[in-house]
Length: 198
Image (tube, rainbow, N blue to C red; front, side, top):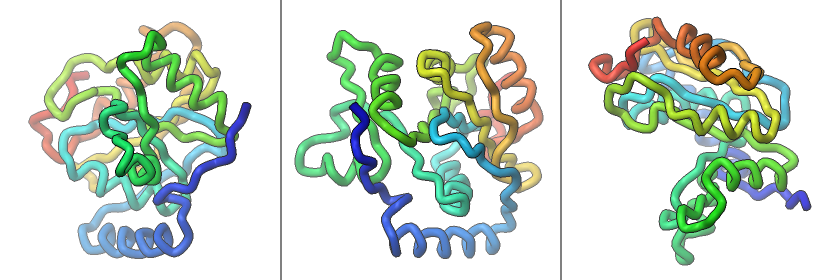
């Protein structure tokens, strides 16, 4: 059964408008530009690469706010203790119970099934350190619920942040991920020493 959509920091009136204004000013002052547009789909997985610094989120935030995206992310259930559970959910968090017999992909799929609209943000590198492969969870979630994958990125070299192509998974992970990595091959993270190998 589809639940009523919960309010988050990205959809709360006044707060989201204030953050939008502050983030636009921040982008202007730091020289970053936004490019592209998100898809018109109600549901999709959005991946953000490269993820090399804690500053990545602050650079991507203005893009999320500009297009009024109600972005969600997955976190361990231990990040959602009762006293602050409402706050973490309000920040866009979706709890994933690692003790459950259902794996992360299954629990994420359930979140999609019970939502009318859901943009799930994932950083498939899984770490801010240098890696040579993506974690495949984002792909398995997208194929499980039959939603596209939006490629989001930042490029510190050109100070551009925004949206790339929309990928419709074919079921051939190796083929699709090769095309995804090709798009990100010339993108430089804020900490370039941690950029992913192509």
